Image (tube, rainbow, N blue to C red; front, side, top):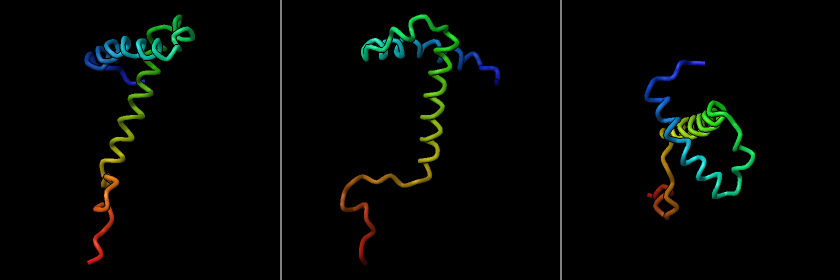
Length: 75
């Protein structure tokens, strides 16, 4: 495991509240209520890492808009 920077640690701490709010809104808080901060941070890191890595992979691929102009022009 790589040591986190102060900024990364702060970001994880700041993300706990919105994570808890989302769990509560979805009725999923009970299974997470007694988890440690480290376990919650691990879940947050997994989601954020997966999201960021996907966005980076997609950065090299032109995004389709769903309009007729997405397809190459026939001339």
